[in-house]
Image 1 (cartoon, rainbow, N blue to C red):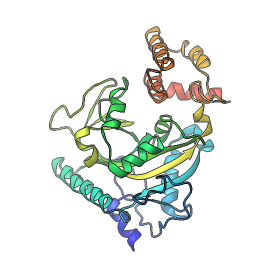
Image 2 (cartoon, rainbow, N blue to C red; image 1 turned 90 degrees about the vertical axis):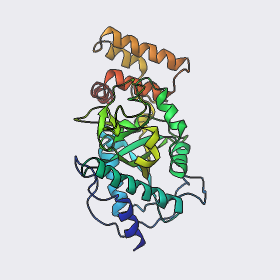
Image 3 (cartoon, one colour; image 1 turned 120 degrees about the horizontal axis):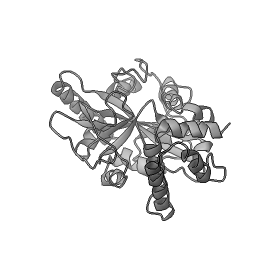
Length: 317
């Protein structure tokens, strides 16, 4: 019975996206943890997450949501574990879900019945995601996007749940090649378009509540710092391996596409201003002025996902 109450509190398997469901509207009756793999939170007794058993419907729903968004990399991606942020293990976590529910109701009233709640992926290191689940988002996460010249405003950026590959490309894996992403529920309310490179850090007017990269087909959601721990609630942690991603853009022992090959291909497709920008960005990366995830973001921003993924796919044949 406790598991049923928890699912209903989080609304994690209900219709919540206006553009379609992620999960079927069912109640998961058994999400008891199995024997844990290597501890995500270092064995901290204050950890609020529970490991989902692989034979449960809830585990399969989250796994399928992630894998389906990996595109051509889906067959090479292995889910290591799925953990759930549980209201049973810590009273403060239960309070956070309660706050999220209150703000959802308030946004519903503000925007004439539509809070516009979405699911989105957040990519980070094991330590960063553990800190976010435990304490919430902080200035450290804001600074990460503030320093990114290609980010759509200064806030917390989430990736639409259907594009998990976009989140998977960002961030470093551990020594065993395991990466981690956080599936969050976010209140968008009425979003406004934020262009790439913008330094906007709050709504442009009272009528707006969040930001997106595109109104018709958004891939990125931006929640401002003033509301990041009210409008976002971490829900699931997915740990995964995808060996090909480790070598993206000239890194790793078996690179998917070396930088020299990528430059040769791009030079035939991009105009000179964009090529110069790519070369300057890579030069900053080599001088350690940019982190690898910032380089990847900028590459995707300038080149575009469609062309970049097409190159990766062709080079793997």
